[in-house]
Image 1 (spheres, rainbow, N blue to C red):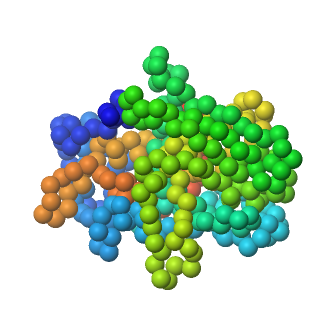
Image 2: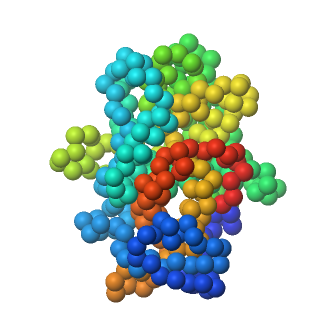
Length: 320
């Protein structure tokens, strides 16, 4: 299947044909920020550490930014810090951009798998959410549909279940339909626990083959729940639904997904459309997932959480 035009990225040849092509091996964040639409930057160094053979292995095994781990609901209630506040603390204490994502860990219920999210998936999920903006749609493109089940008494303690349908990024492909569980919608003390239990039964190809075994020194289990762009887009649509239909801000307040700022979207667009990389003895190529991830964490390290992953503008109006 072919990729829908909205999601197509420039090829190596197209980027090389930019009017102004320059090279750099240091101060990369600033070099990328200064790129204009007809500029191209060739990164002349390896970004992925040698111990990781390739992008896929880096994304599976690289260190992650860990938000605060709670041991009990009582501890979380006493702390009363929302997920975005905990992300701010973790992101602002970042020492190295060599990270494969960030994670949080449930502490109530039976499913205590660590939840892991890469910044690239946050950007791609935001892009997918923006795709359904009426300005970007053609006459046959479906939107993201949201059908919540939140009337049961247990919702206050366990969160709502929401059935969503999310468009594929491929032409002529069916929408992905899946269930999002433990969506925090009730403003009770239990929200401080249910927010960490969020999961889905989504099973796209990128998730199906994302098998990972932890290193011996890692205290947390190898069983990790990795979120993908489809799930990020779905959650943004859920937030939109609850605010628009019920004036309920709790799903946004307790969101575990880092929502990029407009400036971060602009930076990510440059990674995809204006940057190449050339390692020693190799030909130039476009950036892979891991290299984009590292460069996004470089942006976070330089400017901090609130300037990079705390949205202040209307997300649906972002331009990708």
